[in-house]
Amino acid sequence: MTQPEFNFADALREVAQARNINEMQLIEAFEQSLAQAYTRNVEPEKRIEVHLDPQSGELEVLIVREVVEKVEDEHLQISLADALELDPGVEVGMEMEFPVDREKFSRIALQAAKQTLTQKMRETERNVVFNEYKDREGQVLTAQVVRSDNKGNWFVELGAGEAILPPREQIPGEKLTPGNRVKIYLKEVRKTPKGPTILASRADERLLDYLLKQEIPEVANGIVEVKAIAREAGQRSKVAVFSHNSNVDPIGACIGHRGNRIQAVTGELGRERVDVILWDTNTRDFIRNALSPAKVGLIEAQPDRREATVTVTPDQLSLAIGKGGQNVRLAAKLTGFKIDLRETAAISDLDAAMQQAMQDEQDGRDPGSAQSAFDALFKDSKSVATASPDDEQE
Image (tube, rainbow, N blue to C red; front, side, top):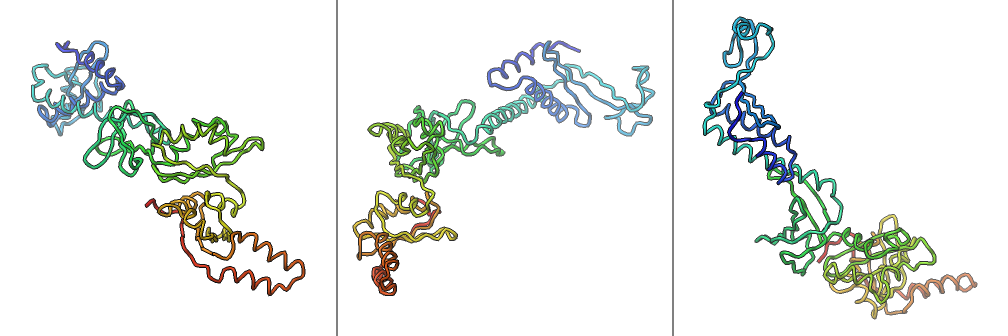
Protein backbone atom coordinates (compact mmCIF):
# COMPACT_ATOMS: atom_id res chain seq x y z
CA MET A 1 0.00 0.00 0.00
CA THR A 2 1.28 3.46 -0.84
CA GLN A 3 0.58 6.86 0.60
CA PRO A 4 -0.56 9.12 -2.24
CA GLU A 5 1.06 12.45 -2.84
CA PHE A 6 -2.39 13.94 -3.19
CA ASN A 7 -4.86 13.26 -0.39
CA PHE A 8 -8.11 12.40 -2.17
CA ALA A 9 -9.99 12.01 1.11
CA ASP A 10 -9.26 15.59 2.20
CA ALA A 11 -10.20 16.94 -1.21
CA LEU A 12 -13.47 15.01 -1.30
CA ARG A 13 -14.29 16.09 2.24
CA GLU A 14 -13.92 19.75 1.26
CA VAL A 15 -16.12 19.23 -1.80
CA ALA A 16 -18.75 17.43 0.27
CA GLN A 17 -18.90 20.24 2.81
CA ALA A 18 -18.98 22.97 0.18
CA ARG A 19 -21.78 21.34 -1.81
CA ASN A 20 -23.77 19.88 1.06
CA ILE A 21 -23.15 16.28 -0.08
CA ASN A 22 -22.77 13.26 2.18
CA GLU A 23 -19.02 12.63 2.50
CA MET A 24 -19.22 8.82 2.47
CA GLN A 25 -21.49 8.86 -0.57
CA LEU A 26 -18.96 11.01 -2.40
CA ILE A 27 -16.06 8.72 -1.44
CA GLU A 28 -18.04 5.70 -2.65
CA ALA A 29 -18.77 7.48 -5.93
CA PHE A 30 -15.06 8.23 -6.32
CA GLU A 31 -14.11 4.59 -5.71
CA GLN A 32 -16.63 3.40 -8.30
CA SER A 33 -15.57 5.97 -10.88
CA LEU A 34 -11.88 5.19 -10.52
CA ALA A 35 -12.53 1.44 -10.73
CA GLN A 36 -14.55 1.93 -13.92
CA ALA A 37 -11.91 4.18 -15.47
CA TYR A 38 -9.04 1.85 -14.61
CA THR A 39 -10.90 -1.20 -15.91
CA ARG A 40 -11.82 0.55 -19.14
CA ASN A 41 -8.39 2.06 -19.86
CA VAL A 42 -5.81 -0.22 -18.20
CA GLU A 43 -7.17 -3.65 -17.25
CA PRO A 44 -10.31 -4.10 -19.36
CA GLU A 45 -10.69 -7.84 -18.69
CA LYS A 46 -10.04 -7.86 -14.96
CA ARG A 47 -12.15 -7.25 -11.91
CA ILE A 48 -11.01 -4.06 -10.21
CA GLU A 49 -11.84 -2.69 -6.77
CA VAL A 50 -10.79 0.66 -5.33
CA HIS A 51 -10.59 1.52 -1.64
CA LEU A 52 -9.99 4.99 -0.20
CA ASP A 53 -9.39 5.33 3.53
CA PRO A 54 -11.40 8.40 4.61
CA GLN A 55 -9.04 9.05 7.53
CA SER A 56 -5.57 8.57 6.12
CA GLY A 57 -6.39 9.22 2.48
CA GLU A 58 -4.59 5.99 1.54
CA LEU A 59 -5.72 4.80 -1.89
CA GLU A 60 -5.62 1.20 -3.10
CA VAL A 61 -6.43 -0.17 -6.53
CA LEU A 62 -6.84 -3.94 -6.35
CA ILE A 63 -7.18 -6.73 -8.88
CA VAL A 64 -9.58 -9.37 -7.50
CA ARG A 65 -9.30 -13.03 -8.55
CA GLU A 66 -11.27 -16.06 -7.38
CA VAL A 67 -9.47 -19.21 -6.13
CA VAL A 68 -10.47 -22.25 -8.23
CA GLU A 69 -9.28 -25.82 -8.82
CA LYS A 70 -8.92 -25.31 -12.55
CA VAL A 71 -8.48 -21.88 -14.12
CA GLU A 72 -10.79 -21.09 -17.02
CA ASP A 73 -10.22 -17.33 -17.09
CA GLU A 74 -6.81 -16.21 -15.92
CA HIS A 75 -7.96 -12.60 -15.68
CA LEU A 76 -10.63 -13.38 -13.10
CA GLN A 77 -9.33 -16.61 -11.50
CA ILE A 78 -6.23 -18.10 -9.84
CA SER A 79 -5.51 -21.77 -9.31
CA LEU A 80 -5.55 -23.17 -5.79
CA ALA A 81 -1.94 -24.32 -6.18
CA ASP A 82 -0.71 -20.83 -7.10
CA ALA A 83 -2.84 -19.25 -4.39
CA LEU A 84 -1.43 -21.56 -1.68
CA GLU A 85 2.08 -20.39 -2.54
CA LEU A 86 0.99 -16.85 -1.72
CA ASP A 87 -1.24 -17.63 1.26
CA PRO A 88 -1.33 -21.13 2.85
CA GLY A 89 -4.73 -20.40 4.40
CA VAL A 90 -6.76 -19.90 1.19
CA GLU A 91 -9.47 -22.28 0.01
CA VAL A 92 -11.43 -22.81 -3.19
CA GLY A 93 -14.14 -20.17 -3.58
CA MET A 94 -12.26 -17.45 -1.70
CA GLU A 95 -11.11 -14.23 -3.36
CA MET A 96 -7.62 -12.79 -3.41
CA GLU A 97 -6.67 -9.16 -3.86
CA PHE A 98 -3.55 -8.03 -5.70
CA PRO A 99 -2.53 -4.37 -5.27
CA VAL A 100 -1.72 -2.45 -8.43
CA ASP A 101 1.52 -0.47 -8.59
CA ARG A 102 0.89 3.25 -8.49
CA GLU A 103 2.93 3.67 -11.69
CA LYS A 104 0.19 1.81 -13.55
CA PHE A 105 -2.30 4.58 -12.74
CA SER A 106 -2.05 6.13 -16.14
CA ARG A 107 -2.93 9.73 -16.82
CA ILE A 108 -5.80 8.57 -19.07
CA ALA A 109 -7.28 6.45 -16.28
CA LEU A 110 -7.11 9.27 -13.75
CA GLN A 111 -8.65 11.73 -16.19
CA ALA A 112 -11.49 9.32 -16.88
CA ALA A 113 -11.99 8.92 -13.15
CA LYS A 114 -12.18 12.67 -12.73
CA GLN A 115 -14.86 12.94 -15.41
CA THR A 116 -16.91 10.12 -13.93
CA LEU A 117 -16.52 11.60 -10.45
CA THR A 118 -17.86 14.92 -11.70
CA GLN A 119 -20.91 13.12 -13.05
CA LYS A 120 -21.39 11.24 -9.79
CA MET A 121 -21.15 14.47 -7.84
CA ARG A 122 -23.84 16.01 -10.00
CA GLU A 123 -26.08 12.99 -9.52
CA THR A 124 -25.54 13.11 -5.78
CA GLU A 125 -26.34 16.82 -5.68
CA ARG A 126 -29.46 16.22 -7.71
CA ASN A 127 -30.60 13.53 -5.31
CA VAL A 128 -30.00 15.87 -2.40
CA VAL A 129 -32.15 18.53 -4.07
CA PHE A 130 -34.87 16.03 -4.97
CA ASN A 131 -35.02 14.53 -1.48
CA GLU A 132 -35.09 17.94 0.18
CA TYR A 133 -37.91 19.41 -1.88
CA LYS A 134 -39.96 16.28 -2.57
CA ASP A 135 -41.06 16.34 1.07
CA ARG A 136 -41.96 20.03 0.72
CA GLU A 137 -44.28 19.53 -2.22
CA GLY A 138 -47.52 21.40 -1.52
CA GLN A 139 -45.86 24.06 0.63
CA VAL A 140 -45.53 27.80 0.05
CA LEU A 141 -41.94 29.06 0.06
CA THR A 142 -40.25 32.41 -0.37
CA ALA A 143 -37.95 32.37 -3.39
CA GLN A 144 -35.64 34.78 -5.15
CA VAL A 145 -36.21 35.54 -8.83
CA VAL A 146 -33.00 34.84 -10.75
CA ARG A 147 -33.59 34.75 -14.51
CA SER A 148 -35.90 34.08 -17.44
CA ASP A 149 -35.52 32.34 -20.79
CA ASN A 150 -36.76 32.96 -24.31
CA LYS A 151 -39.76 30.67 -23.74
CA GLY A 152 -41.23 32.94 -21.10
CA ASN A 153 -40.20 30.73 -18.17
CA TRP A 154 -38.93 32.35 -15.00
CA PHE A 155 -36.55 30.62 -12.60
CA VAL A 156 -36.47 31.20 -8.87
CA GLU A 157 -33.81 30.20 -6.34
CA LEU A 158 -35.09 28.20 -3.38
CA GLY A 159 -31.78 27.69 -1.60
CA ALA A 160 -30.44 24.26 -2.51
CA GLY A 161 -32.29 24.14 -5.82
CA GLU A 162 -33.88 26.16 -8.57
CA ALA A 163 -37.57 26.04 -9.48
CA ILE A 164 -39.28 26.90 -12.75
CA LEU A 165 -42.30 29.17 -13.14
CA PRO A 166 -43.73 28.41 -16.61
CA PRO A 167 -46.06 30.99 -18.19
CA ARG A 168 -49.21 29.06 -17.19
CA GLU A 169 -48.16 29.24 -13.51
CA GLN A 170 -47.35 32.95 -13.55
CA ILE A 171 -49.70 35.77 -12.63
CA PRO A 172 -50.65 37.37 -15.97
CA GLY A 173 -49.31 40.90 -16.21
CA GLU A 174 -47.02 40.56 -13.20
CA LYS A 175 -43.53 41.93 -13.80
CA LEU A 176 -40.86 39.78 -12.20
CA THR A 177 -37.41 41.25 -11.69
CA PRO A 178 -34.20 39.33 -10.92
CA GLY A 179 -33.33 39.81 -7.27
CA ASN A 180 -36.92 40.24 -6.11
CA ARG A 181 -38.30 37.83 -3.50
CA VAL A 182 -41.74 36.31 -4.08
CA LYS A 183 -43.90 33.64 -2.51
CA ILE A 184 -44.43 30.54 -4.63
CA TYR A 185 -46.49 27.39 -4.26
CA LEU A 186 -44.34 24.26 -4.69
CA LYS A 187 -46.59 22.36 -7.06
CA GLU A 188 -44.54 19.36 -8.15
CA VAL A 189 -41.08 17.85 -7.72
CA ARG A 190 -40.13 15.09 -10.16
CA LYS A 191 -37.01 13.30 -11.35
CA THR A 192 -35.86 13.65 -14.94
CA PRO A 193 -32.75 12.40 -16.80
CA LYS A 194 -31.28 15.90 -16.44
CA GLY A 195 -31.98 16.09 -12.72
CA PRO A 196 -34.93 17.08 -10.54
CA THR A 197 -37.50 19.48 -11.96
CA ILE A 198 -39.20 21.69 -9.38
CA LEU A 199 -42.44 23.22 -10.63
CA ALA A 200 -43.50 26.40 -8.83
CA SER A 201 -46.69 28.41 -9.18
CA ARG A 202 -47.92 31.91 -8.48
CA ALA A 203 -51.30 31.22 -10.07
CA ASP A 204 -52.43 28.23 -7.99
CA GLU A 205 -55.47 28.64 -5.76
CA ARG A 206 -53.55 27.11 -2.87
CA LEU A 207 -51.20 30.10 -2.79
CA LEU A 208 -54.24 32.30 -2.11
CA ASP A 209 -55.40 29.86 0.58
CA TYR A 210 -51.98 30.09 2.25
CA LEU A 211 -52.00 33.90 2.18
CA LEU A 212 -55.44 33.98 3.78
CA LYS A 213 -54.14 31.85 6.64
CA GLN A 214 -51.11 34.10 6.98
CA GLU A 215 -53.01 37.39 7.11
CA ILE A 216 -56.25 36.38 8.86
CA PRO A 217 -55.91 34.94 12.39
CA GLU A 218 -59.47 33.59 12.39
CA VAL A 219 -58.68 31.54 9.29
CA ALA A 220 -55.38 30.34 10.72
CA ASN A 221 -56.96 29.10 13.96
CA GLY A 222 -59.97 27.50 12.25
CA ILE A 223 -62.72 29.81 13.53
CA VAL A 224 -63.32 30.91 9.96
CA GLU A 225 -63.07 28.13 7.38
CA VAL A 226 -62.28 28.67 3.72
CA LYS A 227 -64.74 26.32 2.02
CA ALA A 228 -63.88 26.96 -1.62
CA ILE A 229 -61.71 29.14 -3.85
CA ALA A 230 -62.13 30.00 -7.51
CA ARG A 231 -59.28 31.96 -9.03
CA GLU A 232 -58.30 33.59 -12.28
CA ALA A 233 -54.82 34.71 -11.37
CA GLY A 234 -54.00 38.37 -11.70
CA GLN A 235 -57.59 39.35 -12.30
CA ARG A 236 -60.16 38.13 -9.83
CA SER A 237 -60.85 35.45 -7.26
CA LYS A 238 -63.86 34.38 -5.23
CA VAL A 239 -63.44 32.90 -1.76
CA ALA A 240 -66.31 31.18 0.07
CA VAL A 241 -65.99 31.33 3.86
CA PHE A 242 -67.93 30.02 6.84
CA SER A 243 -67.72 30.84 10.55
CA HIS A 244 -67.80 28.15 13.22
CA ASN A 245 -68.46 30.86 15.81
CA SER A 246 -71.80 32.65 15.58
CA ASN A 247 -70.19 35.75 17.11
CA VAL A 248 -67.61 36.03 14.33
CA ASP A 249 -68.57 37.52 10.97
CA PRO A 250 -66.51 35.51 8.47
CA ILE A 251 -66.60 38.14 5.73
CA GLY A 252 -65.72 40.96 8.10
CA ALA A 253 -62.88 38.92 9.59
CA CYS A 254 -61.39 38.32 6.15
CA ILE A 255 -61.72 41.90 4.96
CA GLY A 256 -60.44 43.46 8.18
CA HIS A 257 -60.57 47.07 9.38
CA ARG A 258 -60.85 49.31 6.33
CA GLY A 259 -59.92 46.30 4.20
CA ASN A 260 -56.40 46.02 5.62
CA ARG A 261 -56.38 42.21 5.78
CA ILE A 262 -57.64 41.49 2.30
CA GLN A 263 -55.40 44.25 0.91
CA ALA A 264 -52.39 42.51 2.42
CA VAL A 265 -53.42 39.36 0.55
CA THR A 266 -54.03 41.10 -2.77
CA GLY A 267 -50.78 43.04 -2.41
CA GLU A 268 -48.88 39.75 -2.56
CA LEU A 269 -50.77 38.79 -5.73
CA GLY A 270 -50.23 41.90 -7.81
CA ARG A 271 -53.45 43.60 -6.65
CA GLU A 272 -55.62 40.74 -7.81
CA ARG A 273 -59.24 41.39 -6.79
CA VAL A 274 -60.50 38.97 -4.14
CA ASP A 275 -64.26 38.73 -3.45
CA VAL A 276 -65.16 37.16 -0.11
CA ILE A 277 -68.61 35.58 -0.07
CA LEU A 278 -70.59 33.60 2.48
CA TRP A 279 -70.69 29.83 2.05
CA ASP A 280 -74.11 28.25 2.68
CA THR A 281 -75.33 24.70 3.09
CA ASN A 282 -78.34 25.66 0.97
CA THR A 283 -77.35 25.24 -2.65
CA ARG A 284 -79.58 28.03 -3.95
CA ASP A 285 -78.32 30.50 -1.37
CA PHE A 286 -74.71 29.56 -2.05
CA ILE A 287 -75.17 30.10 -5.78
CA ARG A 288 -76.91 33.42 -5.08
CA ASN A 289 -74.01 34.55 -2.90
CA ALA A 290 -71.46 33.36 -5.44
CA LEU A 291 -73.00 35.52 -8.18
CA SER A 292 -72.68 38.67 -6.10
CA PRO A 293 -72.41 41.61 -6.51
CA ALA A 294 -75.25 40.87 -8.93
CA LYS A 295 -78.74 40.47 -7.45
CA VAL A 296 -80.49 37.51 -9.01
CA GLY A 297 -84.00 36.13 -8.88
CA LEU A 298 -85.30 32.59 -9.06
CA ILE A 299 -82.73 29.81 -8.86
CA GLU A 300 -83.69 26.32 -10.01
CA ALA A 301 -80.99 23.85 -9.00
CA GLN A 302 -80.56 20.21 -9.98
CA PRO A 303 -77.98 18.87 -7.50
CA ASP A 304 -77.83 15.42 -9.08
CA ARG A 305 -76.79 16.96 -12.40
CA ARG A 306 -74.82 19.81 -10.81
CA GLU A 307 -76.74 22.32 -12.91
CA ALA A 308 -78.62 25.48 -11.99
CA THR A 309 -80.79 27.91 -13.93
CA VAL A 310 -80.72 31.46 -12.58
CA THR A 311 -83.18 34.16 -13.65
CA VAL A 312 -81.80 37.69 -13.83
CA THR A 313 -83.40 41.02 -14.65
CA PRO A 314 -81.88 43.12 -17.45
CA ASP A 315 -80.36 45.68 -15.10
CA GLN A 316 -78.41 42.94 -13.28
CA LEU A 317 -77.55 40.74 -16.24
CA SER A 318 -74.22 42.30 -17.24
CA LEU A 319 -73.15 42.37 -13.59
CA ALA A 320 -74.05 38.69 -13.17
CA ILE A 321 -72.12 37.74 -16.30
CA GLY A 322 -69.15 39.95 -15.52
CA LYS A 323 -66.43 41.19 -17.83
CA GLY A 324 -65.78 38.48 -20.39
CA GLY A 325 -68.11 36.16 -18.46
CA GLN A 326 -65.74 36.17 -15.50
CA ASN A 327 -68.29 36.60 -12.68
CA VAL A 328 -70.52 33.71 -13.72
CA ARG A 329 -67.50 31.59 -14.60
CA LEU A 330 -65.94 32.03 -11.16
CA ALA A 331 -69.31 31.44 -9.49
CA ALA A 332 -69.66 28.16 -11.37
CA LYS A 333 -66.20 27.05 -10.36
CA LEU A 334 -66.75 28.08 -6.75
CA THR A 335 -70.04 26.24 -6.36
CA GLY A 336 -69.31 23.30 -8.64
CA PHE A 337 -72.54 23.95 -10.58
CA LYS A 338 -73.01 24.67 -14.25
CA ILE A 339 -74.89 27.99 -14.15
CA ASP A 340 -77.30 29.03 -16.88
CA LEU A 341 -78.36 32.69 -16.68
CA ARG A 342 -81.79 33.55 -18.13
CA GLU A 343 -83.04 37.05 -18.61
CA THR A 344 -86.57 38.21 -17.79
CA ALA A 345 -88.07 41.70 -17.82
CA ALA A 346 -91.37 40.73 -16.17
CA ILE A 347 -90.54 41.29 -12.50
CA SER A 348 -87.57 42.18 -10.36
CA ASP A 349 -87.92 39.44 -7.75
CA LEU A 350 -88.90 36.08 -9.18
CA ASP A 351 -88.43 34.29 -5.89
CA ALA A 352 -91.14 36.51 -4.42
CA ALA A 353 -93.38 35.77 -7.39
CA MET A 354 -92.99 32.04 -6.85
CA GLN A 355 -93.81 32.41 -3.20
CA GLN A 356 -96.85 34.56 -4.03
CA ALA A 357 -98.13 31.97 -6.52
CA MET A 358 -97.81 29.25 -3.91
CA GLN A 359 -99.54 31.45 -1.35
CA ASP A 360 -102.43 32.11 -3.73
CA GLU A 361 -102.93 28.38 -4.13
CA GLN A 362 -102.93 27.88 -0.38
CA ASP A 363 -105.47 30.71 0.06
CA GLY A 364 -107.97 28.89 -2.13
CA ARG A 365 -107.56 30.86 -5.30
CA ASP A 366 -107.75 29.11 -8.61
CA PRO A 367 -104.45 27.20 -8.76
CA GLY A 368 -104.69 27.04 -12.53
CA SER A 369 -104.89 30.80 -12.91
CA ALA A 370 -102.08 31.27 -10.38
CA GLN A 371 -99.87 28.85 -12.30
CA SER A 372 -100.80 30.48 -15.60
CA ALA A 373 -99.92 33.89 -14.22
CA PHE A 374 -96.60 32.61 -13.00
CA ASP A 375 -95.81 30.87 -16.29
CA ALA A 376 -96.51 34.11 -18.08
CA LEU A 377 -93.61 35.69 -16.27
CA PHE A 378 -91.26 33.46 -18.27
CA LYS A 379 -92.99 33.80 -21.61
CA ASP A 380 -90.31 36.02 -23.10
CA SER A 381 -87.37 34.70 -21.15
CA LYS A 382 -84.34 33.47 -23.03
CA SER A 383 -80.95 31.99 -22.12
CA VAL A 384 -78.18 34.58 -22.14
CA ALA A 385 -75.17 33.07 -20.37
CA THR A 386 -73.96 29.69 -19.28
CA ALA A 387 -70.91 28.82 -17.21
CA SER A 388 -69.55 25.45 -16.13
CA PRO A 389 -67.31 24.73 -13.14
CA ASP A 390 -64.53 23.51 -15.40
CA ASP A 391 -64.57 26.48 -17.79
CA GLU A 392 -61.04 27.61 -18.49
CA GLN A 393 -59.83 31.13 -18.04
CA GLU A 394 -60.32 33.21 -21.09
